[in-house]
Image (cartoon, rainbow, N blue to C red; front, side, top):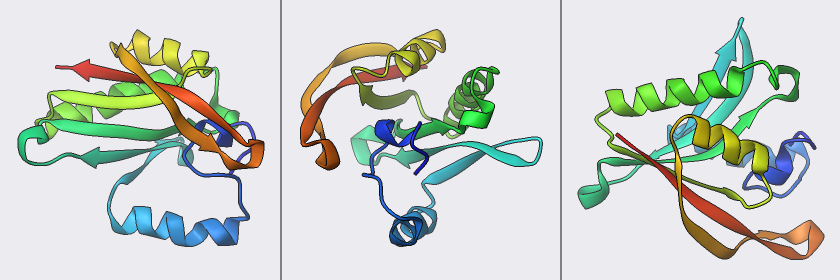
Length: 142
């Protein structure tokens, strides 16, 4: 719920007690992963494995680096670790979407080999701002 990060994530701002059950659910589903630097949680993401004909794919969402750790190369390091993890699990495709205005993230994703695939129009609804945002679909292929 950090104000610098939240605009790029899935959840509208809310008090932490309201977010606790959502966070718990993510942990229960084993899709939430933490990125640790020097014993501190520096970042996080969701990794959702796909099934059947898409079992070679993992969806990467909710990618965030805590502001205390930005600008130090940790985002790049975290993405490299995510790619290595996915490849180690036999994944050949990692896909994600990000807001078209999130230029910093788009540059980072491209730096590690993600490619733009298309635009998801009016994909994200910002309730507190009463507006939609288009998202760019991107993928990394092994």
